[in-house]
Image (cartoon, rainbow, N blue to C red; front, side, top):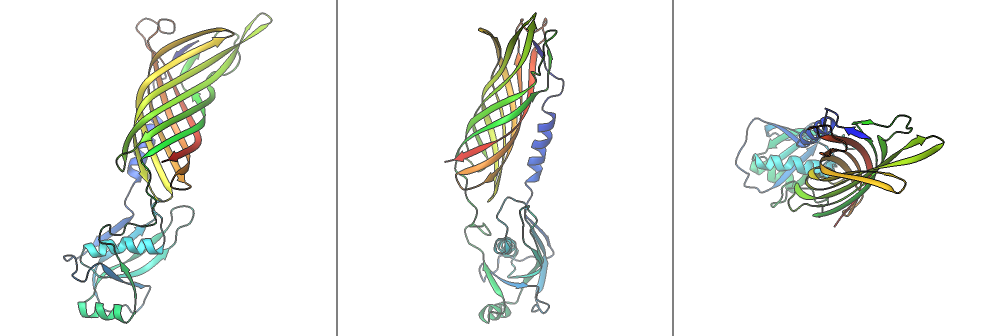
Length: 323
């Protein structure tokens, strides 16, 4: 068979990578009308929840905190996130006008006003327990202590349903579909920084067709293998993690009929995206989407100066182990 590369390449995953990049939006939005140097009272914010008679205070602006799925969203962490901004602009009070807890999907929301009380009134409010208090940590303001840090080393393995997007020239009378099959993926990633890292990936795709000669039928087994280093990006939250990888490496294409086997070698490039649900600090369940392009310059499948290529896409599910 002769494989030919489709003129479209990486179209879907390029769009998904862009969506991943712009999807990491901040969880806090503010409209600041006035600000002061960080208040001398420290980092404790007086919090009023839906009180119709909030004591008189200067309104420094409004704040909205949204659950994006990248952090564990609840009332405590939402207030802490808002309090961080209030401390930064010199405020000492928060009036919560609306709060909605998050469900399975990221739908949590906090809306409120950022306030600045006079020092004497502020001290009286805290002393008389007329409100709740939120103390923002000095070292990492509003950093939720419930977030689980991700280890630097990761191993992943998954099984995929994959299909070849390139066209094949198959012998006349052949039956079956060589463009669809199952693929095994495995890899290792090391992430020394918070977001960027590197590693390696192995993938093996297998399919087959039936060749007919007279009353005899032969099984033509097709195998595509790929081995490459990869550069990685990951965004980690308390429950979810998103991964992207890009690599360039070794590719091979082989066919086997009975005991006769032929293999050609070339280069390949891949782009992969994954979303992971973190079961624990060390284990996650992931769904992957990827594309691999393999290029071969071999006279057995190439015509003249043309380069034959095979592009395949896969959707996979598997495990990620972190250590």
